[in-house]
Length: 287
Image 1 (cartoon, rainbow, N blue to C red):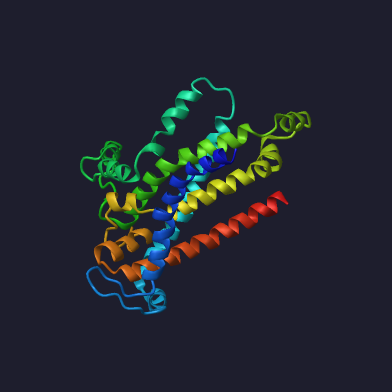
Image 2 (spheres, rainbow, N blue to C red):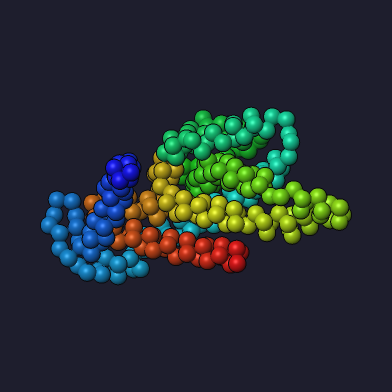
């Protein structure tokens, strides 16, 4: 029995080594770098909190954070509402639901960088199907998705929502299908309207799933890099340069590893604060 108890730990060791090698070690190493002026090929010098004190005065950091918050607010809101609307629509016996669900969820499995290059083709200003369709509808000057600020941001939003609205749809649909049918039967006997049923039964019961979806979408959007990188390259100018894009530019293009590590840890602290806020809200719901 003792031998069998020891053997089962051998199956856990690869997972532990993976976490140590690819999670804990990079986390601690980057934390050390954030207190230095580390640059590729140069000698590291300990600078204390200098990198962190520099961040609030960095106008590019302010720009990247504001752009990221813009995407977080709009992308998360639209993708979750779209997913919720589709989940409510298809939460019934409909012919072809399985086929629709399979086709609609395909964007989830596409690599974001590949989706960005696909968006680059779709939103091409001359030959892209979007502008070709707009011209066919009579628009003489369709948006310049590559060089107009708000058009470029809109293209990123559409591409990101296209990929992640199906995720919200699947999770929320599973949540709706797990709700007890007895409550709805009692509400219908009480001649409640559809809005009242949604407001007082569906929404409160679905709120833990809804908050979880919002949290996951917020974390994913805060990390958004691939789509702006491949679709707009952060342009025009720095109009679509997200937080992660700026960290990438500082660390892997300018090779300022110390400052990039500090920027990344500020993002980590921000995400921890948001996550703790959401989990406290979840505890309030369950209590």
